Length: 371
Image (cartoon, rainbow, N blue to C red; front, side):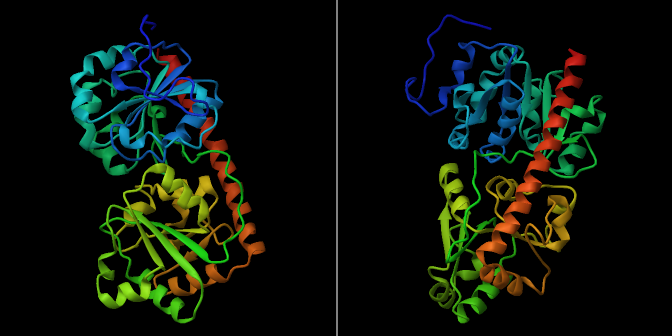
């Protein structure tokens, strides 16, 4: 597909080291070949996955176009081979629906189309773009619940269904690449990183923080999310004691998120067996991608360890009664032992990549047979 129109760039075309960004409508004006793959993300989140999926396609010799919400446009800021990536920005789903017929026509020119998040709540959008029936499409399932709600067991070619975790469906393809991340030394003041949501239990973290502060150990917890504080920390006493120890970052962009993760020592995966049991085998946490990609050992309840391949060699495992002891051990861990955990995490990262790219190739081969 090749129209004789000028590209309408959002950034300067001569701007070195940046990915070219376009408004969505410019998809109808650009050159598309059989070596172009399209990634479509129908949500204003999950962009911590986009660079990882892009990496697999680039490594297999493709160029990648990404149709994404404007919130995710800096999520590929650390990527290599930026000259092989184009971003097309949409503002809202109404815009997608308005141009759906044109988008269907354009999508037919791509070698393959990856739908990065397939959920029942986006059934209308994905169906209107004919992506469930398109023989070139690949569907990423983040939870078994959506697989069941959408009756995806009826999909004849199950190789076109990808999962991030160890689900008993489709093929596992885990996106965890952000750039060439180097193993870092442990900070003198230990830094933890945590992604918060409104439904999680943080009481045991605050309780552990109180005890460790009393022992005069140096640490801080950097929190990102849509809330400006934990609900348990609203009391004046809590705010005073935990000031400069629990630091909140409200609605950060991806570039800031990556800087925070990279400067941290550990990631706390705040999963509670009583409330979050689906994350054991039916749903995957995006925090794991950050841990693999930035080589950050995690603190994780041992109930969930298998779904994320976390062990005592590459991370810290705890149960309900041992988080304080585990957090303290992580703070006291010396740099030599810390790097041992990172190297084990690097081994895991390489193994996940190897399994994933073989599955990507398996999917593409199976789709080619259907075309």
